[in-house]
Image (cartoon, rainbow, N blue to C red; front, side):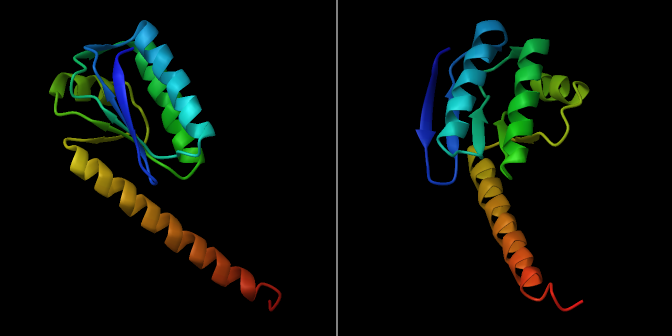
Length: 134
């Protein structure tokens, strides 16, 4: 798989330099994402702009990686403007997969998700303080 990766405190950006997301490419991406999870990255942005086609195995990998991101309160975000790819993913019924047209919007989505997670944990903390007074 031909790709580049940029790691940031809040997310990892994987820029794929492939035209297809199938076979060895999707398998290699799944291995890469597992390594990112081990390193503590729960927000993964995939620059999907060069991808023209994907198959069922690619969709299955995206589904597993998306589920893992959600389990860690993170996001998997695909960045693409290609209608054929977006339509195929929509038809594949990937639940809660975020697809955005630009990297800037994807980065903003990560920061918004982090803020929401911070607010949720603050709410949980404040509820826990008075839990013995029921």
